[in-house]
Each structure stands twice: as C-alpha cells, then as structure tokens.
Image 1 (cartoon, one colour):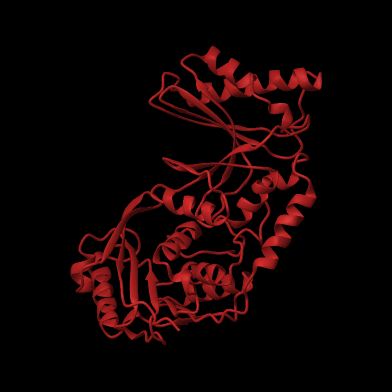
Image 2 (tube, rainbow, N blue to C red):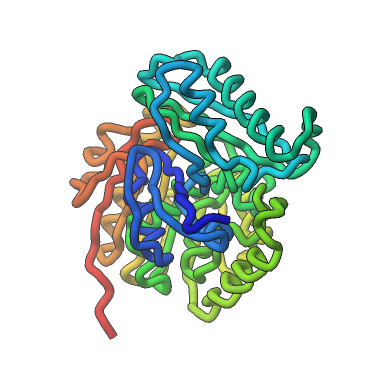
Length: 381
C-alpha cells in the first residue's frame, strides 16, 4: 500500500469546525476544512480509529483522486488511471453513487455508469478476467462533481456513523446522534463531565446517552461494525488493536449525573431500552414528567435540549408555552447553563432571556439556531 492515505471525514452542514476539532483531539494535525468535509492524512489503522471515535462526522472516506472532467472521456480516463486494484479484490462488490453540482456533466446516472465502466476496465487488466461476480466485501464508490471537478472516494464506513448500534426504535422526528454529540461538544460540558446534565424534552434519549458516552470517553462506534472490516487490505489485527485502544481509553470511574425526561411515557420506554443497550442503563435517570415540573438536581449543571418544533410534532402554540415554562425553570436555576436547538424565531422572547451565543445549525434540512444561555462556571477546586 502506497504512503499516507488522503482521508475525508464528511460533516453535516455547519459542523465542519466541530469535526475538525475532534480530529485534532484524536491527534490529526493536518486538517483542511471544506464545505461538508474535513480532509486529513492517515494510515490504515487511522481508518479503524476514526470510524470508532468520530462522534459528529457522518462517514470516513478514502480520497481516490480528483481531476478536471468536462467530458465523459475525461471522466472515464481519469477514473481508470486510479489504483482501484489496490483496494477492491476480484470478488468485491463495488456500487457507484453520484452527485453533480454546477458541472457540465450533470446527468448523475450517466456519470455513475461511466465510472463503473472505467473501474471494471481497470480491474479487468489487474485480474485478467472478463466477469466480476461482486459477491464479496462491499466498496461503495462515490463520484462527486462540483464546478467540473471530479472527486472519487471509497466509503470505509457503511451505514452512516450516527447509527451507533444502541437504538432499536426511535420516537417521531428523532435527533441524530451526530447532532446530539455536536450540541454537547459545543456546550463544553465535556470539559467537566461530573457536572449535572439534564434534557427535559429527551424523546428517545439521544442527548443523555451521547453525554454519557462522551463523559466516560466511550468510542461511539464500539458497538457496531463497518464495511471496511471485511476488506482484505485492512487486516483484522488493525481493527482489534483500534478496539482494544478504545476499550482501554474508557473512563468509567467518573461519577456521572445525567438525567432526561419527557411527557410521553412511550418515549421514556424507548430511551430506557436504548440506554440499557448502550451499557449505560444504570448511569442515566429517565422519567415521564412535563417540562414545567422538572427539578434538576445539583449546581452548575447544563440543560441541553432539542424541544419540539411547531412544524414537526407539536402545534406552535403548545411549543411556545413549553419554551415559556422552560424559561421559568431556568430562572430558578441561577448557576445552570441552558442550550437549545430550535428553528423558532421567537424562542428568546418566550424564554424571557437573550442568548449569550448563537450558532446556525441544520437539523436534517431544517435551519435552526443553537442558542446558548451561559451560567457561571463551576468554581475550581
């Protein structure tokens, strides 16, 4: 295998800086941020480590090549010139996915067909065969055309990284695990995870579970598998090494004070099952209770929540009433900090307080503000 690999951690819109910070904390110094992705270099073991550890990224891709492609001929020749045989074995399954934006080659199905054909031709030369069964490990290839530049990548992840493996069921309009992790990391609660943590609209428990994973430094990918685990080029020992490192890094001696509540008993049932499945059933307290009645315990805590959206679940009037109730709860917790992800323009008005910080984030396709109402920091001991 040739020298260092060009790797890409893809990012939900607006979270690129968070993904880049995660990579830096994992020891990758040469990050370069672009729209929707963070580029960095690594070796084979880094494919394993990043899939196991990245909390806010969607996938880890190998950058196979990038070149100008104004015609189908250029796309074919540019694709065929890349070293596909270094990765894909003779029996590998290699579907091609595609996207095109502001490019002459605008027909995505045609581009996918050309790329597939070019890779087949390359593999024919390498394996001296005319026919590929495609019944082995899966290698998802993406052709991404932007401004007439073709970027070809190989997906090492498989199902996106937000699928941690602990959730069997979800409530209506659930928060993605990657977004929940980003909200927690942006709150900086993780710098002192023994601080109390509370989510009064916890739904299926995503925010409290992600907080517990972060608090105990548990790699989010430990309970799932990845497409590249089946690749002959990535020896089993590398995965074993990366998993052992992750198990050794767990800090389960940190006392956690994490709780969540919701008005919907069915949601709490799902949340309890997911926490148990994540191995955190005893660390998180869930209860069925309306937001107006919550009494978070402790000082200097963080209340982090994704309240229902008017256009999503509750009616607007109900949502505004809920926000007002949360504002009253906040007024009674002077040492706490509050964080809310919301598309509601009048949130601060209803919460009876101006946000200290705000950040534009997208929950799925919904444009939201991540509002931060900062309380005092805990005293240094």
